[in-house]
Image (cartoon, rainbow, N blue to C red; front, side, top):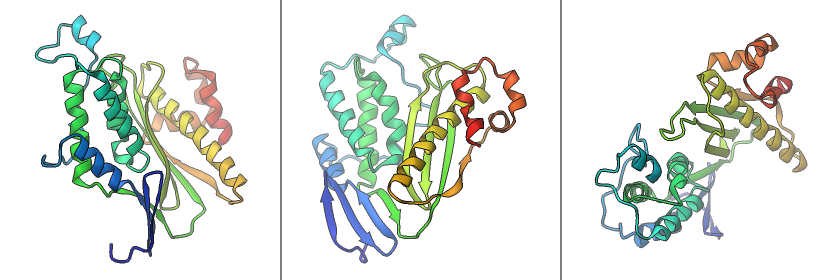
Length: 256
């Protein structure tokens, strides 16, 4: 960090310049969050969530009699404020996107276990409060995107969670973790819907960069790990086998 240049602040975000590029982080904001939660002396966590952790709502636990020792949180405003601050911190911390997406589903009726897990995310932030985004100084006009889906990961609704990130050269410019609006019966369908969402995002980014006067190297690259979804997007013959998928998803083929 010795080669960092002038440090600037903008809406709580710190900008530091180095030979590698511009580093954006919210270190001061993160440390204030740790202090407000009373976790200054707590042991940092190495991960925001446990692997394969499944959280459920109050209604789900009552229906299946799975409450156990868990109780509803008395002051839900405490939980809502904490999630709101984590959402703001997510501007520069893409590593907590999935955890915040999961916890934000229980804003109306949080349980004590939900609040404890939210505090675990804060402990994870404490492990490296200065982590952020590095906007690389290397010139590049290549846009690449990566998408993946956690199929039927929501134990309450059995909806899938879409995750994607988009890079301009070596710099991350867009990312999201979001639960899909429909329930899908096959993994190829959820992967295909994920590709549709990210193609729409790529189309918007391409238009934005053109308005800014930047020429992007085409074609943009989209990486997906589902062979069936890639074949559906590439070959129109497969469309006859996927009529159960909404027609608006098939615009991926038109963009290829």
